[in-house]
Structure formats: C-alpha cells, structure tokens
Length: 150
Image 1: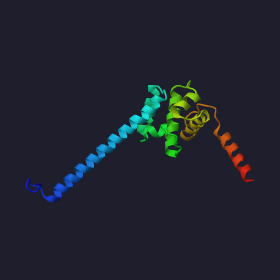
Image 2 (image 1 turned 90 degrees about the vertical axis):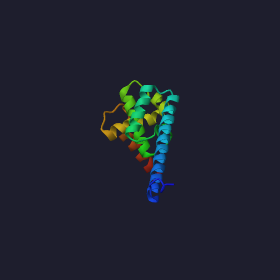
Image 3 (image 1 turned 90 degrees about the horizontal axis):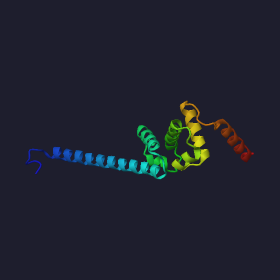
Image 4 (image 1 turned 180 degrees about the horizontal axis):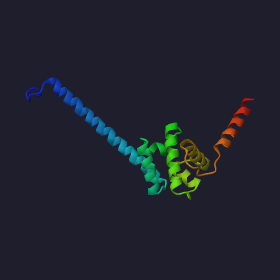
C-alpha cells in the first residue's frame, strides 16, 4: 500500500518510527504532567496554602524535579537540595511561618526544617533565616562518632 501511494518501503518505515517516537514522547509528557499534578495535590492535602504550593511548583519546574519527590520521605541529595530550596523560599516569603508548620507541609520534624534552612543558606550564600548553627551540629556529631570508635 505504501508503494502504491508513491512511497518506498524505507520512507514508510521511517514515518512509522517517527510516529511511534512522537506517541511515546506525548505519553511521557502526559505521565510527567500527571505526576506533577499528584505531587502538588499532596502538598495541598497537607494544608499548604496556594502561594506556598506555587513556590514548590516553581522550584520544581526550574530544577526539573517532580513535586512528588519533595513530598516523599527520600533523602537523596538532589531531592533534598531542591526541597531545602523550596523550604527556604517559603520561609523567606513569610518569616512568621513556624518550623513545625513547615514540617507538617514537608513531612519533616522541626529540627530537620531548621537544618534544611541553615544548609540551604550556607550552600547558596543567602542570609540565614534561623539561628540554627550547622558548625555546632557537625562538631557534636564528630565528637559522638569519635567516642563510639574509641
């Protein structure tokens, strides 16, 4: 049939391959959009206000990360760095938000939120938003580890 329409077999094969590739890319885009929607929905379920969800969405889009990853319990470095940035930007936008409230939104405890804020400000050179001292925490951890190995 392809040859009767004036096309050779190779051209028809290439056209089918191109169509299949476009269909696969469309499917992947749809899956990515659905994952993004579900991730943002998880933050809304945790009673995060729309302005904060918008910050999470903006950070995730800029850093090519699914919001669901930020909502998860994973501690992978790349995810944690993006999560830290989102937490920092939310706190910077509204400094009166408490650590426990941020913790509920991101499913973390207050100390983890404080550590996240301090770590992001240290790594990015931005102003500190909390008085959490990372150097002191690191020193205590080193002393604790040295005591266990002695």
